[in-house]
Image (tube, rainbow, N blue to C red; front, side, top):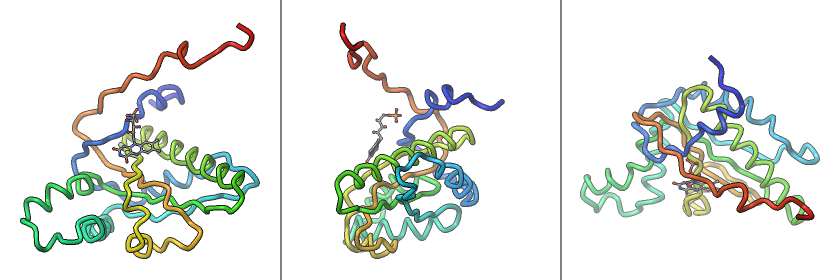
Length: 187
Ligand SMILES: Cc1cc2nc3c(=O)[nH]c(=O)nc-3n(C[C@H](O)[C@H](O)[C@H](O)COP(=O)(O)O)c2cc1C
């Protein structure tokens, strides 16, 4: 049975441990097709995606190895395997690119809109039984990585959204109670 919006929001977790099962690229693309219905001011559609699922994900793993462990060839294979687990455990990825508008207002709006899109994608994935993790590793800004994925001048790679499956649903991490973060105006 389909999840309600409330159920999807509360069920969504960041999957930090996945089992390596590949996610069909068509599934990721269909999630993005719906995720782009995120609000965005001025209809600037402030996003672009570089997607790798299914077999293509292997090529991304090779790139991530070369970018994040430049001396991998000199290291013992097990060490490289261990360091690469954070990538090999996933089954697909979307890199989200956002224009860096020179005007601060527009830049913040565009970043906010892209964030809404990422959350949409995560919730759509929940509904399809696919796990996700929104990550912002430092290599997203590395020139070699940017060049390899075709990031243009004036574009920021705002996140790596991993897709995959896990043997166990991650545990929920409690949020601050609403009373701590909410004031009823005038009280
Ligand atoms: C902007 C943003 C950046 C994040 N970056 C990372 C990251 O680099 N690595 C990571 O493991 N999780 C990252 N996360 C996931 C958070 O750690 C996660 O949302 C938080 O622990 C709460 O867990 P939950 O999503 O399962 O509720 C990021 C989340 C957001 C919104």
